[in-house]
Image (cartoon, rainbow, N blue to C red; front, side):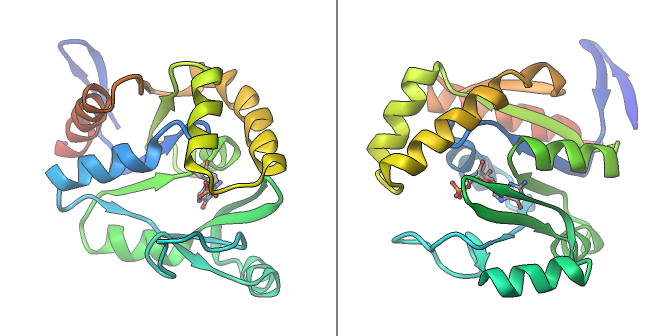
Length: 196
Ligand code: 5GP
């Protein structure tokens, strides 16, 4: 539902889709915003990619084998699912139902094709694009993070070019040049949408 506000049309939404290239800083910004909004939940996706150092199964992702992921696709357990840089990722219907059923708003941190799927399945959602200052800076961040091989980084950068071209499809854009400024911007967008 959209309601009028001083700055044009304001969307009231309980499902917030945060998208944008890998390495743009979606996860960091969402974690920062959640410190200020304890009731904001993030849906834990499922993935077949390898667990990284510091990640915990069931916290960052439900880490599934390819067979288990495929079984859950067959069983209709995903709202959307994609293959991304050689691995599968998907939003679990059970996560959304649990969080929304409990009365909280939910953030989905997902890539572009998933964001499009969610937008057509739930037209009332709010979509936010987190933009890195530039593709050069994005490459620098992905290499500094050092969680992927060179080939995987190249695949992510190639996908990022496609994702950047879709920026106009989103309801709001957060430019992540400065993490504090970007956190404030994302906070205001989500607070505004979920205050209803
Ligand atoms: P990473 O491997 O860096 O954790 O995630 C790779 C990309 O997949 C990121 O852009 C992330 O936002 C996206 N992603 C994570 N979970 C999901 C999901 O459930 N669905 C979709 N479509 N993308 C996801």
